[in-house]
Image 1 (cartoon, one colour):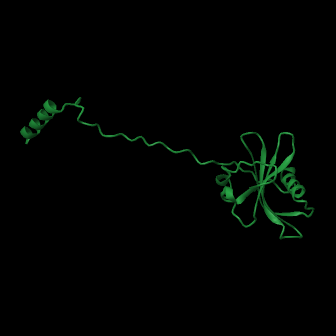
Image 2 (image 1 turned 180 degrees about the horizontal axis):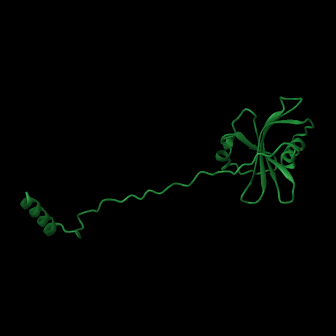
Image 3 (image 1 turned 180 degrees about the vertical axis):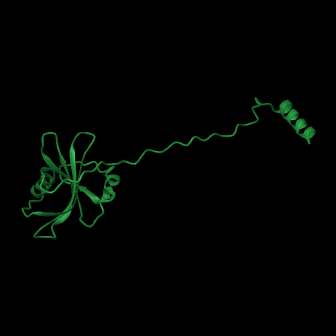
Length: 150
């Protein structure tokens, strides 16, 4: 059994050899991890704090409403540009049909703007759920991943 194996190895060395261009090396695949999905570091503003009342005041002013809100969900975060943002899902206390989802941004000058709105019944996961408010050019592309679970 040793003789046939030795003859085979000798023949390969004489005919092909390691430097033979006809012998292709096995392809090597390096698996590279894809980009990590966007994550948001949410905070839930506490009831009675300015961090909770500020976006509600901006939404009231934007919508022209005066009644109090019942908040179904509110989350806030600071973006990479340093602006503070809120996601709010709420309805009016005395007029429950007045409801929705809003994205509010606090600019460096302290002014709070409603960037986009979505129907209350949407999940808000897809950029198509959101409609930038007039005069705002909200970048909603990476928002869906951040809003998962809201």
